[in-house]
Length: 155
Image (cartoon, rainbow, N blue to C red; front, side, top):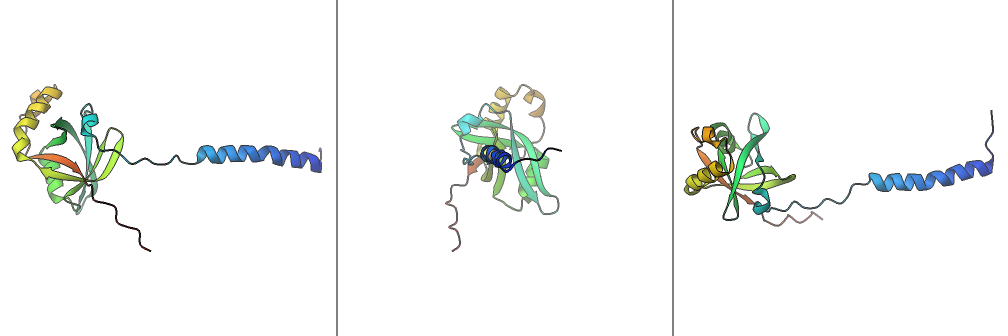
């Protein structure tokens, strides 16, 4: 068995330090960027996920279609998704995932006055809406991000 000299051990140690630094730097997470609410960018997306928290079932994500009208994002919900929104323990806030971004505090504002326009926009955007439009859609929501300032940190 070959014995490593002190100089050889020192050389091995010095060579491993740059490797350790590189590995540490590469494994460090990049700084997180705040998600940007941009309905116009979301318009090309087919699916949006809505997070509700039920009193008994807990967290649930519903996949729904979305449309953008006059710079605002809208969803049209079927009976089950509408029931989940009505029972949501974090109301009026929903979680939203769209375009690879997550938003934790988005208000779901009922917009019955937009139901017809949203239905028309859905028909124009989604070819399979020819079947879906005849199902019950009791809730049309405008999605509005929470813009309240974050609470200051406790001292």
